[in-house]
Image (cartoon, rainbow, N blue to C red):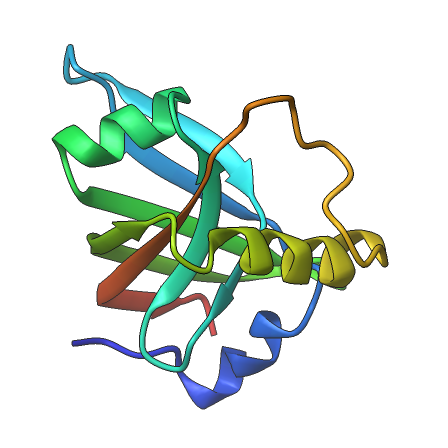
Length: 131
């Protein structure tokens, strides 16, 4: 398993968006900017049941992420990996944690009626940086 190098570990705590690439049913790529963090082993992202990326991840667990440093967009972290778990357990708490990090709000403000959140755990297999 690959890990985030110490030289880029600071990106975990920054408001750095990750561009998450998944594979559509027809084999074409699909990319979505997402909030992210890490549990020390896995990359964590959050989505809602029924969204395109959730369906793609259920069908094909392979992903790639590109994360640019918001203070220096020429500094980035690239990750290729696999989804090892998708769970509703802890997903609401996680999206609220991400709302605090990215918006400064205690609770995720964009929840839709009936929305079910899903916590996605991604195991990095390859990690690269530009420096």
